[in-house]
Length: 595
Image 1 (cartoon, one colour):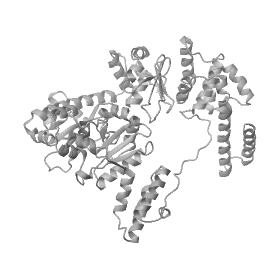
Image 2 (cartoon, one colour; image 1 turned 30 degrees about the vertical axis):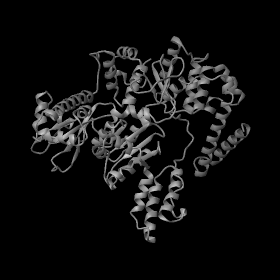
Image 3 (cartoon, rainbow, N blue to C red; image 1 turned 30 degrees about the horizontal axis):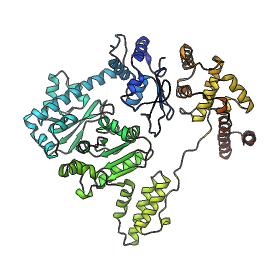
Image 4 (cartoon, rainbow, N blue to C red; image 1 turned 180 degrees about the horizontal axis):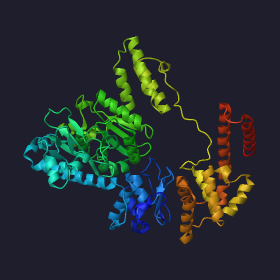
């Protein structure tokens, strides 16, 4: 069945059908997920698209489709690559065609930006190959080799991370790339070259250079370290390009993602040499923010690998800049985990980092040091308080103010309460002297007939029952004095109506009839409701005995939601108050009947 969500007009339908036949979704997913059997024709795994602790990502091997009961994601092999790797439709199809050994059809149409991105990638790959070779062969590269050697990194380490060197000559790389067939215009687009008013020059001249990859492992840019001590900036990143967006990347993520997935833990450090040091010591689940303030996009990358409640271990410098970076990370990641700690490297110097520890004391020492941790919130609050003179009332007031400001931004009420007590004791004041909002304000909800893209388990179960056993379902609903619209979001109830009207004997489960149901339903259902459709399709229909308790519970839940919405409309003076009161009276009467 053709994925309804994709812009298939770019490739002939026959080609896409052949592609989906040749590429088995479960085999494709093996490179990303830890797959477990989940019954006949089904496989489960932790969802790669949202953080979770129990597997809700399901692959139906007969259909060649996936569905996540946790976040609602669904689709075929093309959708899988697009959503997991964050690539375009054209890129996903091209990737799968390469895996399947298929040539793209001559009449395939692609967007104008796709060939451009492919050309940029080719230029970046060529630049990395040249720079890496120069690290070992160029006469001017000796300081770069000495730098790596002084930090106990070998040629094998340099090869593993693809490190290179750009000579100080202003256009050595430009000339080498032009000779290799990469014009200056493309080098500027790739960010390997820069242009001033009067000249063009190598962006990373005179620097030791690390290649930077996106989460899928594709080269997108570079980070260069000055070795002369004369540059304005010690570290320089590729400027923003079509491929390089600094705030959406984590250095080393592509190499760390499998270890992060298996351990549900990640170490976050400041720079490239710290990632190399941690990895060399055995902690391959290490990434670096590379000098950027930690962003929600970077937090999403971590959440996709370690899941809800996963462990984040920070190893930033113990200075003001390091604490600001630590706070930014905590603030971005607290929505999916509070297990955020910091490595204590104070025994190796006030500003020691993981690379320093490994350089001076070896891999074993760094591994041991990584086990000495403190909760980052405690570390930050301690620094807030340490900056105040607690021997004076004024100093205690200032410390209290700093703690209040910090805790006010913490989402967890448990953390706020416990650290309120801890900080009060540390400052020498009463718990009540530290005040902050007791709750985080949440947006008000309104009743809506629009379905959430993710249905509750009970809603999906009831809908699956209704479309699978329409005759039995009609009798049961009549007994409870309700219908699909009384149990489900409006658009989902319409979906059920469509299925039972066109398939009065129930949704077929096997063979050509099952494919027919899928084809018909994707034709009549609006695309925005596909997530709900596929969640229902992947839900096993229960027996009458199993559903009898679910229907009254779901009915009561919907009535309570309606009650709250009506009460809110009345209190806000929205609509005809008399009519709203009549509706509320009816809802209350129904609630008493199903209590």
